[in-house]
Length: 121
Image (cartoon, rainbow, N blue to C red; front, side):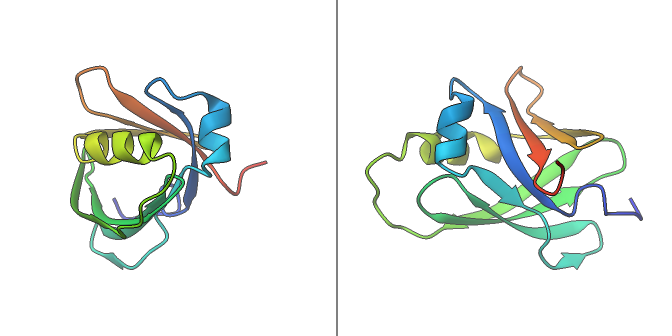
């Protein structure tokens, strides 16, 4: 994938698991894919309310992704339900679709995470 302006941006999470849009907004749930890029691998980060989460994500031409090297800071916060669910599911995401300002990640088993570009309004 030679052109990366489509995925290399900040993405606000708008749908994931049983969490409401309000819960996602209150936690400022987002992934940032604007980090250093080497080939098709981007250094990304995420925030799900408490800790800073870091990872590498590789975008492949066939709508597939590979997420690896997930680490995070280790603060203990009052409500870590969203963060724990994200950490449990994020590495399992294997597919991506970008439609306009929307990014959808899915694992092939019916689980998905939906995002809207933060710079879209």
